[in-house]
Length: 110
Image 1 (cartoon, rainbow, N blue to C red):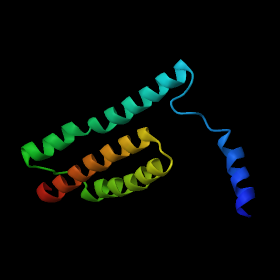
Image 2: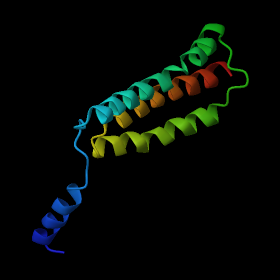
Image 3: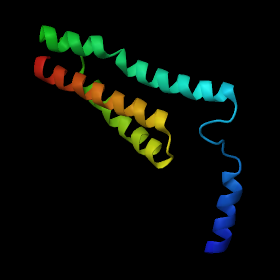
Image 4: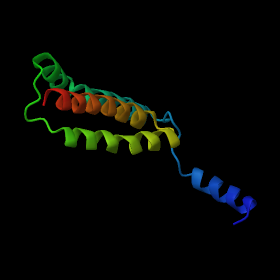
């Protein structure tokens, strides 16, 4: 495919994309809600992190699981950056940080 046809193919594809921020109030509210949930979800792991580091005990916490979850967060962060999707980038960056903290706590205190 030469460059000229490629450019027109991309123009046709981009016409089906929704603008960000959305034009309708309901979709803008949904965009904000998704970002909020994306932040609150990882924050729910703070009690686990606090328990590990305050009690200095990670019995029953699998370091392998949390390392795997941290590694699985990386492709999502890259995807969000490439597609310029702030909710995905914020959510999975927070998950990466918290999963790594739990992984390290499980290694140190497990």
